[in-house]
Amino acid sequence: MGAPESGNYTRLVAELDHLKSIGITNLRIMAGGQGPDDREKRIVPSIEPEALKYNEDVWKGFDVLLDEMAKRDMKAVVPINNYWEWSGGFGQYVEWH
Image 1 (cartoon, rainbow, N blue to C red):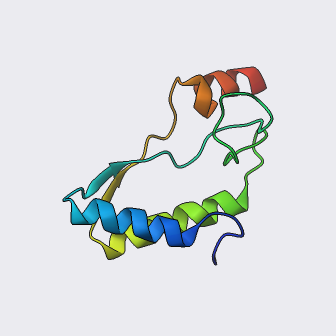
Image 2 (cartoon, helix red, strand yellow):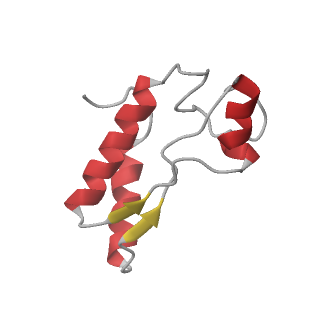
Image 3 (spheres, rainbow, N blue to C red):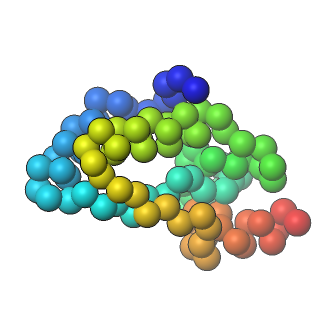
């Protein structure tokens, strides 16, 4: 899949190393949110900026994160969706469909 074009790999590695050093090995993370990206209080860039249109770069970043976590024997709890406005969530799907 390759590396994402955006993001900060150096910071990601440093943050994961720090978490591991203080004994944190299980992270609850958001894989990404639903757009549109120009709305207030949203995860930007979103993994799905429009209905059924996916941001490949965000998927690549998510893949890098999971790979780096695995190198440190860290686990991830990844909610598939939620009710929070800031992530798009179920409300965005209702609006789209």
